[in-house]
Figure 1 (cartoon, rainbow, N blue to C red):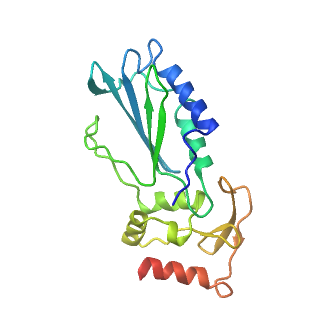
Figure 2: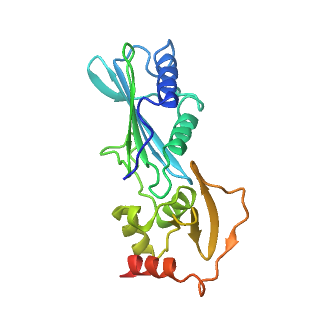
Figure 3: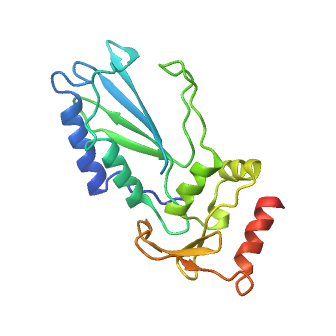
Length: 213
């Protein structure tokens, strides 16, 4: 279970206030609207974001000529996602940001991918493949039991062994390599340690049983 960054954390509240000011000013994507809902799916390799805007009680999409600034939305969400990481438990994958012109906004996070029932560009949302999820778990590693079933389904289908968090050593382990993990995820500035599986067979045997039964 992911203990996500609280909705009342300073970084979330500051980001929501900044977004409110930016979204509803003249010329911005939410100017004159009643509500803006921004939905994001965020992976290490790629991300997807869409907006639904309510005007005169009718929902519609945003114009492509206007968007949030990178700092106010995308970079902020990446920061919150890092802050939400809990060692061995992971971090969230998708989120919804609710913005209103005259009241406080809110952030909801989800530990799965959100797909649009009808995309505004006519292109169906694509689910993450095993390589994408591999990169996510390498950056924000989880213990075997905390990798959700939807991820295991993808890994099994493609025959990919995911990185796994080692709580005893506070490291992430993959392909006979090991890196330290901090409170905000894997420390990629460190030099990977090479693991001798003949001396440490336990974790790899557990992964194999989980992956292949």
